[in-house]
Amino acid sequence: MQWEPVIGLEIHTQLATESKIFSGATTAFGAEPNTQACALDLGLPGVLPVLNKAAVRRAVQFGRAIGAEIAPRSVFARKNYFYPDLPKGYQISQYELPVVGRGRVEILLGDGALKTIGITRAHLEEDAGKSLHEGFPGSQGGMTGIDLNRAGTPLLEIVSEPDMRSPEEAVAYARKIHQLVRWIGISDGNMQEGSFRVDANISLRPKGEEKLGTRAEIKNINSFRFLQKALALEIERQTDILRDGGEVIQETRLYDADKDETRSMRTKEEANDYRYFPDPDLLPLELDKAFIDTATAELPELPDAMRHRFLAQYGLNDYDAALLTASLAMAGYFEQLTSGCGDAKLAANWITGPLAAALNKAELDIADSPVGAEQLARLLQRIQDKTISGTIAKQVFEAMWAGDGDADQVIEARGLQQITDTGAIEAMIDSIIAANPQQVEQYRAGKEKVFGFFVGQVMKQSQGKANPQQVNALLREKLRGKLREKLEG
Ligand code: ADP
Ligand code: MG
Image (cartoon, rainbow, N blue to C red):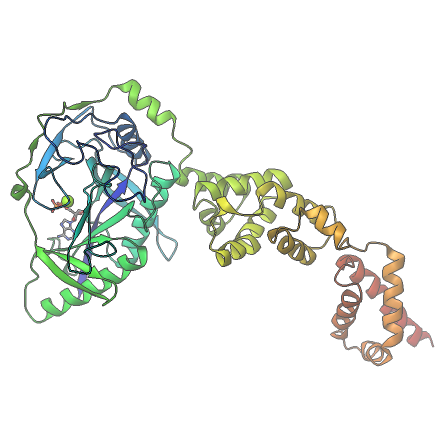
């Protein structure tokens, strides 16, 4: 029998706010443990939560970016469970009435086709603290520490429909959401710091069957590579069970990257285990149209819309358009470069070529590129006005990257100006023809290929600086002359 994987993701993304969702403590990452948790985050009695408007605005913005309904009234609920990093004994979340309703995003599949993935809902909640198992006094003795700095950091939990059918689709969807939350600026999406975490639900069913199979949930995956691996492993594990006539049990599993396996954490709890009930300390969240409209007006042009505009406005191909809209910083760079040099195709080639290679090698984001769009535009202008050739431009670019100054300074300092003086190029050609009688003879004998040899010699003698079009034209003229000499002589 053939088994079909069915995957749905729950993505937790920390919202980029200064302070926590229900307290005034800072959300900055990386402080000494327990220095950024106030009485409320510690779950002390006598304090009340106050909802952070900025967190709500970001949730609304996400909803609008996925074409979802924003609930005019949503409710915060207590999700009750015990864990050492949750001192209150409950997490404030949204359950029955989430702020963001049904939406959708499009993902680009490997074969270039588009697929729509449904988003069931997105709700606001608070993050828990962290258990530390190493790297503090006492951990050597097997003790576990608790850091509550993270407690109360605003989270948006984005729940997808079970619409994905392979690990690749799941990764494409997760990447899409990651791109989107960063694009609209609601989260830094930093996966190393835990700002963007994925829980993957996966089940198998016989191909053609409608009914969903029993799923396992793999918790807290913090890289796209791990997501791919964990799902592939889980497909293998469940296939083995089902093939042997067994049953998959509904459970929560953990992906262990070191051992490259998933293992059971606990059998899956049911919603009613959590005794959800509306939080009596918080009023229902009521949003008026003005708030939603203002939040919406702050949204930048969205990635899909921009991709389509790039195709139409700049005549780019699908691949370049997708690449150049990978992030807002990338798209901004492209548009600035294009307006600076007036040639979208040239700009696209330079960004996806030399610039992307240099950024990759240095492991830098385009926002931190040592060569900015304006600087690069001035370099491309020197190709366009024929001061230098494209090949020399790559050399100049490397120097600019290394901090040797702007394009004109590098060209000047290294004497890289293109040689366009016909007399000078002719003189070089003459000396090369004189020095290579054998090749001239071959050319006369009809061996067209030696033409390339002559071009190479001129470029070599001019250190790459002779204008290639002129070299070609003059060389052809001179060699034809030699041919005529022979025929006439
Ligand atoms: P829970 O309340 O346990 O979190 P939900 O119904 O909210 O469960 O679903 C959580 C996620 O699991 C969603 O992304 C959903 O698409 C996915 N999911 C639900 N059932 C299945 C299934 N049988 N196989 C794969 N994914 C599933
Ligand atoms: Mg859930």
